[in-house]
Length: 379
Image (tube, rainbow, N blue to C red; front, side, top):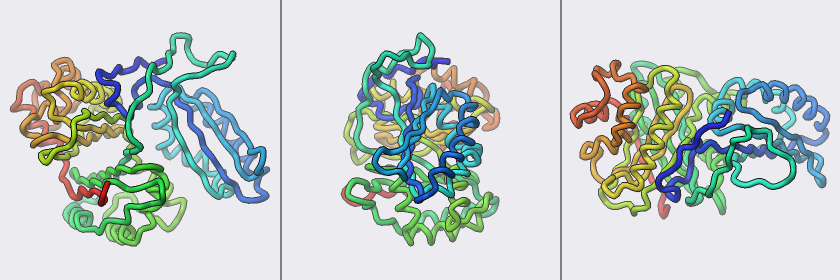
């Protein structure tokens, strides 16, 4: 089924989106241990039928290097980004690829939206499917977030630990650098958002090895709802899969940051099953704001998985000065739709947030407690 793209009002401002309806090509590069080729192929044969049954999956290919028999490539095609992101961040995905783990020495995963294609073979997609008309424009920066919950009663302890940790080394290698880390607390939920120039996976592995980070992670381990052991590869993979909160949309206004720009994070109260629709709505609202001269929003990133929608927004001035823009609820049609998607009754709010007083109440309820917001030197 094709997905109607959300056409940006300012295409040059949208650097990341999962909502443009584009097909997705995933490239997984693998280096396997010597002599495990047959074992690896058997594991793939077991895995491919399970992957083929995943909604949104179109097909895949397994390729072996011409020059090096331990280097392999798996490519897969998906109808669009949302079903792929739901699959790759699920425990079902971990169970499916588990047989590969004993064979694999190193992996690298890359995800692309299909922009152009050539050749006589017709793609296995609906006839009315269209390719994205123009490339997204942006810098070499990747945004990602992790989220996890802490035990009731541990919130203040976790906040203290995460507020005071020493920043890790920003340089990963010649092409990758950690630019910014922002941590927030909302009730029992922690959100850690990162900005990386270069290779995200390399940066995450680098950060996980730093002694400053390991000390903090060990200190908060007793407070976590779900236990983890980052020294055990299986436990670490399970934690990072459960904790992944992918960026599904990012837009910038093109205006330079000034001294008044403030960053805040919002977690939206979503009705069951409405999270992806809300994430799409916020993306459209942010695109409209990016081309609105009256908007104080300088940049906004929407993160989504399951029933969680978090938005990181940089505002010129205090968010309370422009709550509609800060919440991405500044257009009447968007406010009306949000009223059907948000669980406002749980916050004690009656009806959609159509006036400034209600918007301020909603902003206060959704705003996360900032713990850390650190930029790397010379970033």
